[in-house]
Length: 192
Image 1 (cartoon, rainbow, N blue to C red):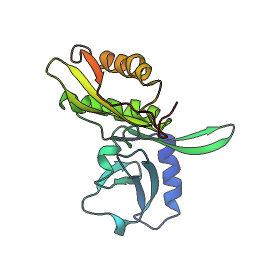
Image 2: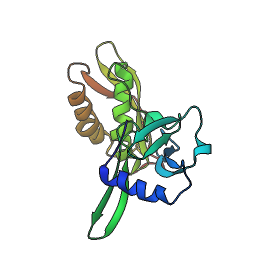
Image 3: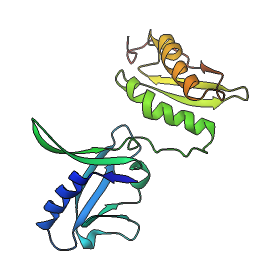
């Protein structure tokens, strides 16, 4: 579930030597599943471990994960890197903002996951977002834009050259087309 490099494990062991006996680390996500999700690592004293926590054993310590953070920390990686600027702990959690879906999930959920994990973060730079309204029986993903995308002069280009190409490539044989049903009206919210 969470990979902790040997360098990071060594770093944690050194830090934990200075803490009370039985102290481990807690890996968590604040605001999981949202665009404002943030990952963190903290000390976790023995009396702070809950019965619903996941306890992952590592060499000399446990990584404790709360039940709410667990699905958002799938495939997370913690490393300790040293370069010319010094040393730092890095935590990469590709699923922190969006809960990863299973391979056998319905196609609509898999398409929405790709949109949430890869496309919406790019659209958010312009105050926009897109979501799946429905998948038709003939494989058309019907999308609706919102925020700064509504009324944007570049929405057709974004749809055809970006989103549609990505989704048709990613879901070849399952999706046949992408269609926008948004009633685009220019306004103060539009990014153009």
